[in-house]
Image (cartoon, rainbow over all chains, first blue to last red):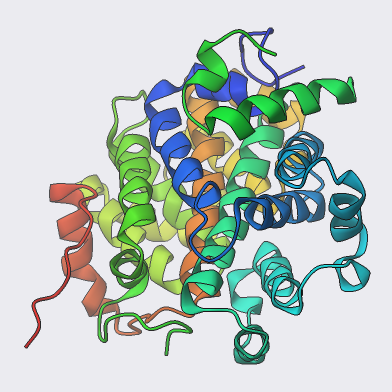
Length: 185
Length: 184
């Protein structure tokens, strides 16, 4: 049961966004700008980073929500998504993405854990300044979302199909207030 | 030196926002809504929670700047800021604020570390749903800002005097994104 009184028909972060619309607006705008951009990293790669960090933070709702959104962008290749989350080193993704996932994993522990060698590795694998910036900010943003969702004990649906349905909605329409004002898929 | 090419001599988050103004605008809007929006908690209390969490994350830039803002906003009671950073349980603040700082500290470790007992304790000392929500979201938000600032190794002044004018600006003007420095 959530720690505060929330709309019971809304799962996870959606209930928190509805509880506090004045903070929901910049959070939605930030997610849209950072996760939907295809400048450098693709939206699929951005969602993979979000799902990976959420798994490290053990946040069931965010991990499964963003894994499902990444799958949507990857023609439903859930196997690839699961490989990245369980062991990205052996997943069939680019060396650049692996180096960025390494940075994201360091950020999940502490910003201070990111070392110059991690940045050098990412650059050597072809990452740009913006790729590195976006990776650090995505990892940091999921450290926010994961804590917000679990710190208030929001409801994480156990029907795994519901994650796929909500993912289709986000893949089609992006982030924003519609995720808590429109009918839940 | 920062890991990416940001303007020289611009400290902390301000340098990152100049590098990426499109995300920076939303980050500043979030800080403004969360730390200055209408709420039961005062702006001083919210800045204090931000400084407390940043201290636990060892983020010197965020801790120093938000502590400076909290000292300005607390005015004559500014001493409580350093008391909280030194040992929150012994500080001259209300039991309610201690309970909310405790929840913020648990959230800083992991959202999953916040227990039903932590929440009950806060309620018994008078905290409402809104205040509990705000304590968790402020802690979560600074768990982001601290990682962003340190993860890119942004410039962190070490002289405490440099944070005094920052605190005054944050207390008086709130969160306004920086604009690009004029080329010399």
